[in-house]
Amino acid sequence: MGSTLYDEVGGLDGLRRLSAAFYDRVLADELLAPVFAHFTPTHLDHVAVWLAEVFAGPADFSAHLGGHQALLRSHLGLGIRDEHRQRWLDLMADAISEVLPGRPELAATLMEYFAWGTAIAQQVSQDPVGTDLGDPGPTPRWGHQGLLR
Image (cartoon, rainbow, N blue to C red; front, side):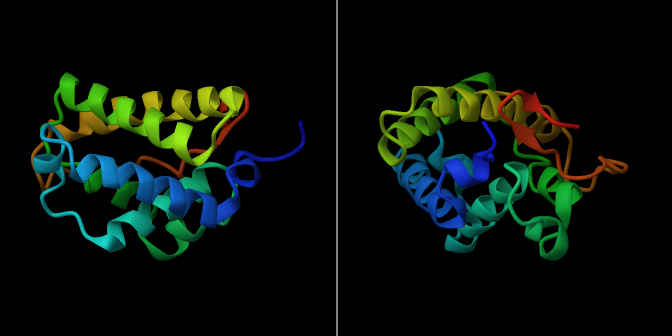
């Protein structure tokens, strides 16, 4: 298959729809809403831009929003617990089913990325704000076979 995940999800517009469907669920969820107490509509767009870059679309998160370092830093101090991570994954699976219905292979590939990424976010979230994360390297790229680099 020659297309990228970015193409398959409908580009930035598709990722914005996915992000919106997901955060509608998160903000209505009693377990996750407190974790996202400082959520803003800008966050929704930043998530779509991040995912665009990860899924082989434009590298605008790195160019304009601080790249991989900024993404990791945004999770410092959140104290994400196992139940938070599992609920996040459940709500994302529901959002994918809504926005990209009838595409189980695509959904599975996306969920593999989200399982991988949320594990890293959970790990980083245990460190206090201000922790020096060092250089995490470039934004990871994800394709049909998983992590590309």
